[in-house]
Length: 221
Image (cartoon, rainbow, N blue to C red; front, side, top):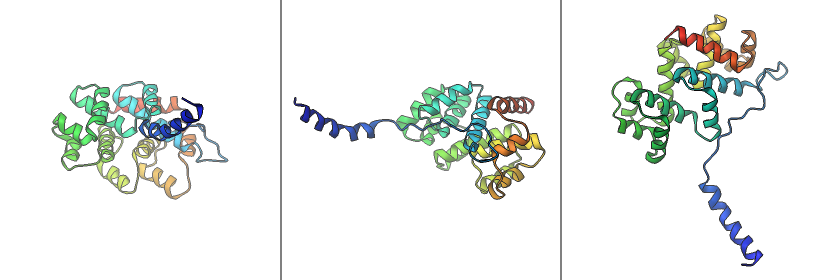
């Protein structure tokens, strides 16, 4: 085969190879500390590391393993659902992740598991999306550990708060004495930053954040 023909075949194959490759979601952050000159720059990292710490404490897993899975392309929604369903059914999370791939949705996975009772089972019954099912998992955990009252949690969800924001707002409220709603609104409406609020309560590292969450969750089981 001539070099020219080989080059042509390679160019033809590249699009199909790229389409078949799994999508990798980067879970790497170059900015991991608060900078008062650029107060919101590290906010994505603070939100992600707090969610990972909460996840690790809730399911008793190593946070590094969760970060590694996300770096491999596993979404937060998939992890919340795989571990929550595993906790309810005794199945292995890895098995459930494979089931999600083969069945195409977590709703179908959950139907096959014949879940009974609870908000996730009800959401499955109503045909909820994977995103909504993952939110239900997080909501149940936040209520179980008494990070929120139902009314405040529902109001913040309605206002647009996502999983990461809800978790970090609850942590900051416990440390600052402010309400979770005040903290969320300060960031969303008043130009404050998550990093700035963490700085003020002296939570400056991922280790401190996880340690504080672990204490909170241990006290409130």
